[in-house]
Length: 133
Image (tube, rainbow, N blue to C red):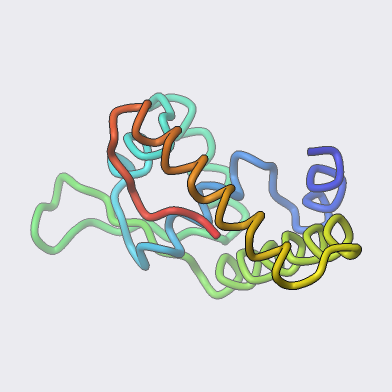
């Protein structure tokens, strides 16, 4: 966590903000309700995160053309760039930590971690909402 936290300050986002950005990037667009349900955030906490991301120019909100009561969220170009830079950050961590492992061992570890994540998801109600990388 400290590795990511320290380097995320260079990206200008917090760990929680980054997860919201990644979630939106995987959906291309979504509502705040979808984010709150999938990331288990309360409305107040999500509102604060979205306000900061909007102020930073990373997320844009507009009314849904289907239902004017619903806001639709999308990443801006800056938001997409931040998500891409975060992926580079995650890959650099993987490279650092797994540098002594061969490709087969890395694959095996990744498969085991995916199984653990799936098991955790099942225990939390069994709903999967677009897993992160």
